[in-house]
Amino acid sequence: MAKKCISCKNELDEKHRFCWRCGQRVFVGVNIPGVEVKQIIFCSYCGKEHPDKARFCMECGKELVDEETRKRALKENLQNIDSEETEFVELTEDVDISVDISDDISEPFESEEEKKGLQKIEEGRIETKEETIYEKVVKSLSDNNINLQDKKKLVNSLSEPPYDETKVKALEYAIGNKDAQIRECAVHALGKIGSADNALAKQIINVLSSATLDKDKFTRIEALKSICTISEVSKTCSQVSASAVTNALKDPDAGVRYRAVIVINSIFQFAPLFFKDAIPLLEKIRDTDPMQINKTEASNLLEKLNKTIEEIEKSKEEAKNIPLEVEPITTPNVTNPNVTNPNVNPNVTNPNVDENKNLPFQSNSPQQPPKPMQSGWLRFRPLKKEK
Image: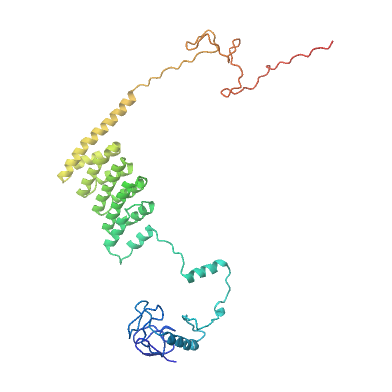
């Protein structure tokens, strides 16, 4: 039996599922083969009222076919369906059909878990693993279809609270990106997180210290700014950050050297001795740097740094020369009756001291536990002889 497209009235074969002329899909029981659409007013699916000559429902999008024609065409299609090529059909209450699917199952289920798994697949309730922030950043930065501005927005969004190690790990991955602007944004975001969360500051300082060696000068400058911000907020300066800033004084770019001098001037007060190695580098900048502003800033910083270090070393030398005065502690001789204690009232006797032996008695108090009795302490009373 030949089918007929309900959209363009083109004749189709039984095996055709799409119209080769207009591309309309031929649904069994919905696109009715060989039956022309009649003029109707109400949709048989949702009951929406339509004007005359309407072909599709404005509410649900279904073809507008009256109920009697739909049932009749459904019965005709069910009789012509081959048992090996079955399709899902939306059945009405008047049509009753039973399909035997026992031949499709070759082996029974071995366990209840497989049955539950199949049921979840059929119902479409498979639980998908939520993508982590790190995975999202890695996927987005490696996708060439995403433009640079969207990648920068994603990296900058990681600086918003809440903060955790996953965001720090994602930003550390972004610092290794080939694009310099993304690396600069990642360094800036790490500076904001480190200044807001003191628990992550140490981990972030280690990442920023490596960023001071980046091949892009703007990334190096941003790393120095972030180190300065974190140190000023926490009022501390670690050996790692001090070494990174000191090495920045050797940078070939004059702008990076200027930023390093400014950072040292801001944080050296928290740990002046960590910057002793920076003194010869600052003297070199003061004498040979081509930029005058670098010479001026280095000269002012040298004066402050040398003065602070001299005061600290002078105070250490003074502390070494101060003699330690130790007051002797005198204890009264209790065993010698000839030595008197001026702090003891002679009229008050000590009940725990035997005047004859000058030894303390055996006491059962908690402060002085009882001592084991020595040999010769036990005395036996002799028995009386009978007369």
